[in-house]
Image: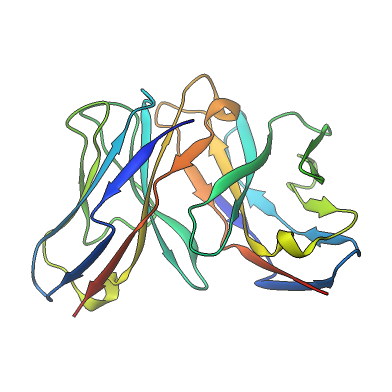
Length: 114
Length: 115
């Protein structure tokens, strides 16, 4: 079946340093898109950025990600982490079919320390 | 701004009882989803729908039923609630036009405790 893997449950980084959250996937569908969602404490998840184009960099709010179909990855990166970035981050796979299934990874909690 | 409303926001149920979680969206989205969120498991898909009258099983449908009577409403039903169904439940809606258009908009969540 379709699946999304986020290997780190918790990532801790010092403010101002770069951060990378990993996301890989498995799917048999050819028409797909990927999303990163962010969930702040006691809030609902909200979209951070999305991409459906292979090897094209997508940016939003200082974060960026590039879909690499050759390695089945869509890692999230930021060059300088901020305290306000502390949150739970989800990678999600959306497939184009008659049912439009969306599958999430298990999430990575990002903790930015001063 | 897309609007998804869940009710109730908090629910305490007894084991073996019936629980209905409701979701309403005003975005005119075809797709609606029910997820549960548990530490260590992330957001797991229970049921989803691609239009009024349709329901599809997600990855963990056992013990849950879903109903989509209209474009706006999508319910999750626990016929015989069990303590293992204690969780936070999120409803979401998304648009059509291909997977890149299917940005999900989430409700505020329902915290369910089954005692």
